[in-house]
Length: 304
Image (cartoon, rainbow, N blue to C red):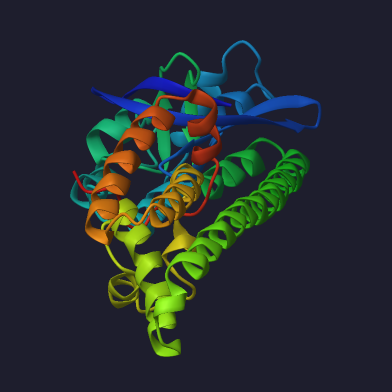
């Protein structure tokens, strides 16, 4: 499920598009929220295993435990370059381990700029969420058996996502391939007769780059130069939204080739069409929902 959510974190409010799903952990519903392609598990839902009426109190007690603090504090030091380690070091000396020491998700986020534990008051994400590393540790503190159930269900969730992504990737690539065949057939019928074999190859590459420049703002060669460590090509690393537009541009380009429209004019028309279609599709919740579930990141965008 995908929500446009306004999530209050610490003292600030951030607009977030959240992807949220649920796991059934030992007959308990546990929410999983994805923010910026990072999963967070609901500590609030996990805490209800111990106390249905006061999950916040359970979380506070765990965070105020010295051993717990050592764990989530070290996690931030390892994963968060903006972590307030100076203040962390101070309270380790002055507060942690004493009866007066109390830590809450809001304090941890606000005073220490933490990212591993997120207090949220959004419409669809009320409660406290944590990175899986921290959530597993919290579950272990609650009950070791419960932790094993949680790990099993989380792994199942990720396996299902991986399988769905593989199917989705195959479908979208086949769609692109089908339209590419239409595109290349049009080139053969209209351009090849007047060219040498060497020129034919150049035209194929050139026409593919007409689409690339119109949609991504760069040629295939430029993309490879910018991404030397990535295998494949720019089309393998784009998202569904842009692949839908890509397929439409290839059909449009094939039609314009048949009508003997110059490459310069076609490029301008394709770029205008790409901008318009991206705008329309980006406002479609169903299309954007599928796009958000895509793990591939867009390399490049339409130039304004």
